[in-house]
Image (tube, rainbow, N blue to C red; front, top):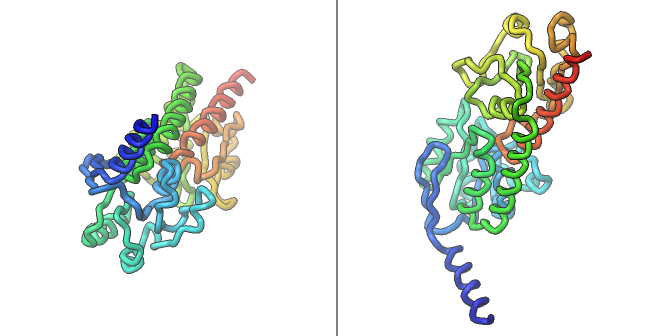
Length: 290
């Protein structure tokens, strides 16, 4: 028994020092000589993924709005999604930077790449990729013993949602990211996948731009049965549609407001946000009978 324990301990030490090779969201191979000990998170959803993978203590820097879980608020900031302080990044001596591509990120990512620090791009495009991302973070950080059970739990929750809402009648839905201007999301975005799990149909799924600006007239013409608006700090939401009483979503009282941090980040809490969307869409179906 003593020999078995010694072998297990030796295996754990060897595994912790072994090279790690994974593929990122771009399909690029990322290899580290050993699991990372000092990581910088360049997106709020990345911070949440790292904490879910049991690697929160290894995050030495993060960008603004990395505010979940509570412990994330104490992590030193290296900038925002618009501008990164490269000197601060270097001073933190990271052995891995996890980046996210967005509208103004290309210049930042190129600057980070020149620092010679390994970069991993994280951008789950489907709900199934969220637990996979937790698992991958565990491999990168050497925290598989925490990451794998967390990933398995997320897969169970997602499977339960799919089973519960499979075959439910479709609800044509408008998803409002913001109203000034009126932003929505197309079919390539992970939110459309969340809507599909719940039996929702994104009325602007065919748009070519991932986050297109649409007109109020276009929404009124599509006449969705349900509208979701995200809100942050008591701003935003779907209530602005109440001034259109002939809109189907308004007539049937299917104007839903959901916390933005639950659904606007492709992290573990998006599965919780999806459950909320499913419950709201089921309420919309029930109102058809009234």
